[in-house]
Length: 585
Image (cartoon, rainbow, N blue to C red; front, side):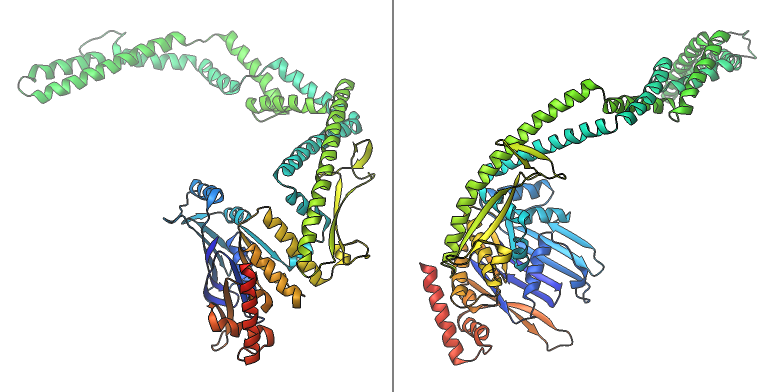
């Protein structure tokens, strides 16, 4: 659950802290006091889009902080994810979250004391929080959202079936498009393949090797300057280890080092430090001897063969012919050839390959059709259970004669859509199956079943949405549910029933409700009021917990706009008494 939420510098809220409970938390306040900013703050905290226009000019940044405490397998999974990312949970297992948005639109996120991408907050939000508002009601009117709602209700095994279908559908469409492209552009592909083959034949005849141009360049330099290299190496070898007439006037390096070593060793008995120096001179003599040996080997390897030089010239000319056509260097030519071989396989439009691809298309099409049929059957089975469960909830929301029907409809293929055969019938298939899902409302007995967007008023749509959420909550879902004025357009008995349903949800979930209905607020386990302060130069809002008599005064204000009315307070106390009694049932 979310134990605490602090909001600073967001909209009309200067700095306030909401301390939340595990049950039903209700947030009320006058219009314009800033109730919406609480929901906006929650959205920011869990990775929602940052709107710099809502940041207060002073201090120039908005900060939303929260303390999240989760239990069970979800808590273990979230803490492990945060630890892997470098964050840490507090000693009591709670996790600190923070989101900062500046007036310039820059955004930063912190989780468990570490700076992290905003996407990490979004990932957490998907697991722990579900926000429902009037915009969600409008979204539920879209067929794609209705299908998603049914799929969500159907359960994890159904989701695995959807994943299998999507994978098969993607592979099928890729083969269909590949086959159509090869047939449509066969002549162009053949011409392009011929050009690639010519290039590959030319490169294969030359057979360039990686780094060969650099190796040949170095060898040419040695062959062209062989005489100069021989003279330099010979003189160096003679200077190091003789090989010329040696006299006292022209000693070599080996002789001089030997003389120096012997001279120092002769005096080492007097001063031991000279012995150390003599040992180092002996090391230098050994190194000089090694260099002299390598110079001798180098001289033996020098080759001034004119025939070899001519062969290298010809080889380099062949390589330059390739680099002029295909790449800047030999390695680039080799890479071009590799890419050309890959592309040739893609350009193949032979009858054999086309026949093979067509067989693969037929095989995948049969798989997609079989999975689509299973998906349709699963959706229809889930639709019956879903319709019944939502209709039962509607009866408890003062719509006893209303019934929700979920229709799973198949679509006939069109010219623009791919088709598969499902149970012997050709149907249009898409990434989500061969179905359209439509939620319909029977407003009263004898009334036709109309799509929600046509058959439900604003108040009815609010109750349908709440009924769906109650059904979803019974099947699991995030532990914290937020309802932002989903009771709009509802009053009287229906309002009391909404409060009762939300209180029932609060037995298994943490529920946050932003409402203007006193009948709903009366069911709260914790009642928070957003109050506006216009005493200063700038209007600000804060949030406080109301209890006892203060709570009755707030409900009286919501009932009649008169917080001090004796009649209003009496009515509010009666509401509180009824709600307390209902919650015990």
